[in-house]
Length: 499
Image (tube, rainbow, N blue to C red; front, side, top):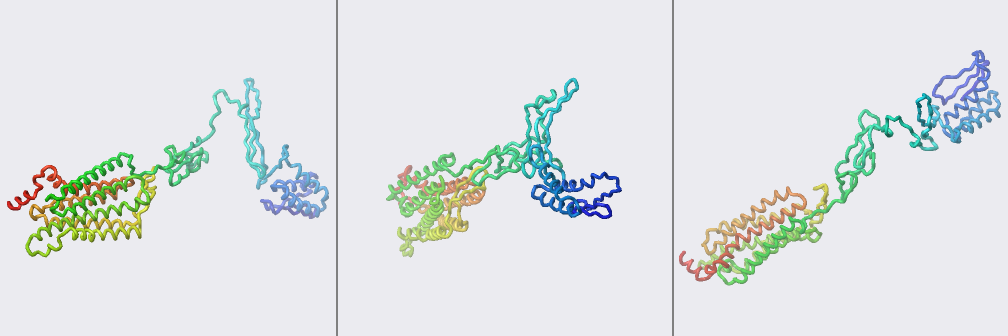
């Protein structure tokens, strides 16, 4: 603020004004004399308008007082005027009147209801007050709805909104080109919720929760696995128990008739080992059913592939035994010294040792573990065993496949041996079934998800073992039980003579 008196012309200017023009008051411009006396008041009032608190007003008012005092105005009157404006520029409630940056004062607004009576008289009915926000208080909206009188045309207060509030489970989506009060209510996406009205956005549920169909709360996701109580688990358990009982019965039948020709024909010890390994591989199905644990995840694939390797090694050795037995009947044949139960057990050990090494390396380097799958299905968490090393799992399955193919090739080559040693035909057919089952298993397993992957593998275990039992042991059991007269040495001698 600056004030100068030159040649009876008082000039004032303010550097804080948005207008850079200078105000000139000339004695010859027919202004009343009170204008000259009112200049300090007008400038102090202007300072009061552009300051937002008492401290800032004191600072700026002091500058104005000093400028006018230097030009001959009475300092005492100026200070008195400054204090007056500071203390008296208030509402009746005692609150200060604040001004915006543009000098506009804040205002309180009375809300009135105009009542027009039949005699054309008008009365204002005070309903409430609206107080805009200020530096010292928040915005207030006070209304007494009880004294409000509407035109008889309305039976209730009219809705003066562009869009109704959004319910929980929805969020606001602003409408293009319209005010913020105009919006659409959009339901939250899957996995997200809003539990408040007029939500700006939805909140994502935690990983172990999922959104309720109403999208207004998160519900805990159920943990899914192949259990014994569900129909599929019960069915697979029943089939497993049935096949285990059948195989155990076959083993008991072979042990009881161990001295008969049909049991002794191809090394009864190999038959015992094969049947026991089939029983154990069937029982492995129970490691796949029920809630997975760290122990079951470690053991189930390892025991399964190892039992299959023993079964196939036994079949391979049975086929080799058929060939050796046929050639050993020739005089001075060198195969005689390799023909015996000890040799067969050693060969089984050698053939299955490769699978044993793979399993040990698998357990040490990358053991399977329990995994909570939250991605496959949205409403459930699938609890499953995950193979940490796909390469180790594939290598173990490939080893079993190589034994099956080798067994099939050897059995196929030995299919034309004499009838007494025709078990090679049964073995070749069982290996054909075995290979078909496991070839079908691979694409089906890869396309299945969750507990159905486990069900596919259990079905493969049952089908492949059922093929071994039916193709290899069913013909022998038929003779032992239903045609015992064919299971005698005399019958086989007479058959050889007739050949």
